[in-house]
Image (cartoon, rainbow, N blue to C red; front, side):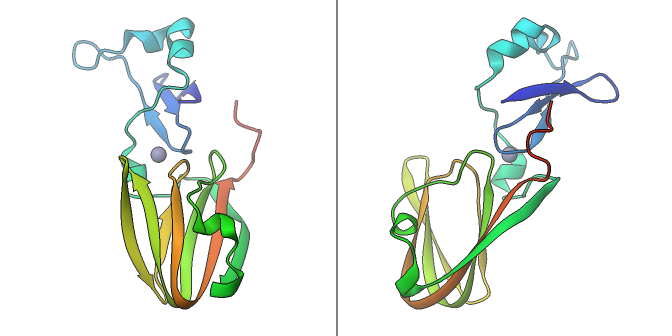
Length: 155
Ligand SMILES: [Zn+2]
């Protein structure tokens, strides 16, 4: 969590590092989050993580836009992409294979999770997920980077 705001009904909404938002209501007796009702309580939760269902479904956050796109062939893929790395905080990316195939390898829960992508297929790269690409022979790929449409305007 990197911040909070109240919705039109006055319910608290957590702003997650991934770009998604999630209600964190205090509604006794069913949902108990007394900490959210005080500034100190909210402040103390900053930096903590919440499970994020939209992330698990690889859904890009609302209000994000593509701001950069790069394309490579097997022989021009930067070293950095072949080694384990992640995107900048809050940045999502879409990896798309134009021709050939590659393995997209994510480090999840301490283990490698490998997805083979063929021509026309894509993978969503979530912020903070360590990953690498492993080309299989000649391959053409592009990576599109997405971020919040108006950086710096978030309260
Ligand atoms: Zn998320």
